Length: 202
Image 1 (cartoon, rainbow, N blue to C red):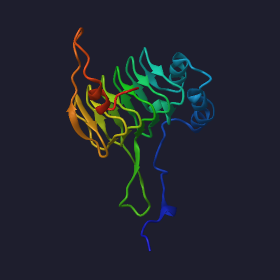
Image 2: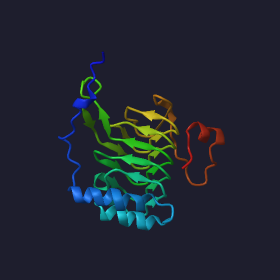
Image 3: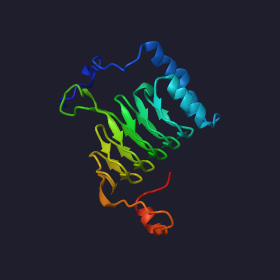
Image 4: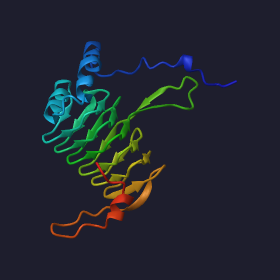
């Protein structure tokens, strides 16, 4: 018989960081408005997140379908992009630097379970994404991951370890693919095959 006893699960120690009424207001009013495709305005979504405690810099582009667990645990720099249906599951703080792109369907997961605990205890760790980094479409960042400045988690990658600055990682589990280089003004674009390999595309 399995030694796991999910009935014993207890996360009473966890504190979301806001009173119950504010959590309820977010889940029943704020979150549906944030995700709504009827309201296409990024400026409204920025205003809404700020009203619920998020720290959002200027120039943010936030697409319909974005899901944020707790906006008061979200920190965003300037000129960030959040693509359609990305999910910021921030039981702990998620910090995005400036010029960060989180593409469609990406999942930033700050909560996990202790698989060695019979009660499957909850564990939380923050996630941070450095300036100019890119989380590709449907990529997953595990709890505690840090993407360095300019790093890329390619489309569909499962990232359980931090990615150093200016490195492109791809796959499941994500592994080093190449060094990212930003071309200078007037320089010819890289071949399209290189872009596909990196899993680019917001």
